[in-house]
Image 1 (tube, rainbow, N blue to C red):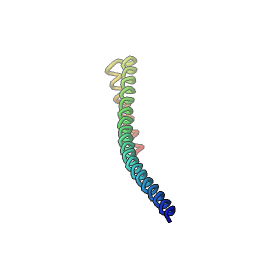
Image 2 (image 1 turned 90 degrees about the vertical axis):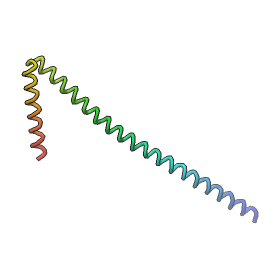
Image 3 (image 1 turned 120 degrees about the vertical axis):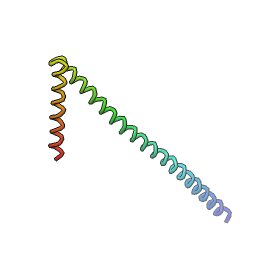
Image 4 (image 1 turned 180 degrees about the horizontal axis):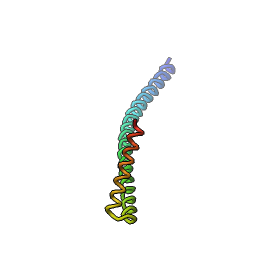
Length: 95
């Protein structure tokens, strides 16, 4: 009878340890899930910022190219025309 009691006590101890470990891992999992969400939002923010910066670089490069080729005023007018045409295309595509 004593050996059975020892076996039962050993099993109960192991079960308690597994429950404790499960609770600790669940808490750690929640913390990591929150970190993942934070990092995802940071990534989205940085991706948006990167896209804005790429557009700025493109605009500056385009402006410099047109300025060198046509002069400041005519280059600005051509860029405005291109932007208007792009806006018209976007409106047509969105319909």
